[in-house]
Amino acid sequence: MTLYERCYGSIVRYAWRRVGPDQAEDIASETFTIAWRRIADIPSDHELPWLYSVARNVIANSARREQRDRELNDALSVEPESDHADAVTSRQIAISVLRGLSDKDRELARLAAWECLSSREISIVLGCSHAAVHIRLHRLRKRLEKLFDDHQGEGTD
Image (cartoon, rainbow, N blue to C red; front, side, top):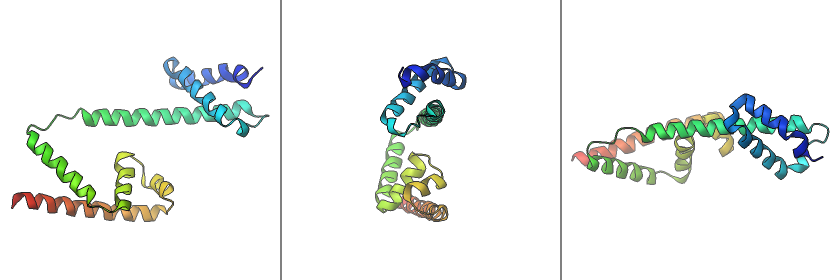
């Protein structure tokens, strides 16, 4: 009997109790896809607990993805600006400001704003201390405020 045959039902039931029947089979499928890729990592005497751990992570990743999707949909459903020209100008200013940043600052901004990572998560991605990221984010925000203010001032002259 294969690992899949021995454990699939248990993993589906585990997922079903946590996410409901609509997503349970998708979670189980993703769990066994990961198991297939990492077959050498599965402890032979603890197969099911290992699969439960993978399923737990798949569920957590799915929940984070759904939360980001909801936030994005909420952001996109904001009323459009009444004046299209103002919207275009604002977008051009934002692009110009972002292009004016260093590569390191652009990456930091992307991780914080687009990927919605916490400063602790960013520190892991960048391989530096949490304190360093906190300081860099603070400085980046100040720099962005100044750059936006400078661009706004140019438009009123």
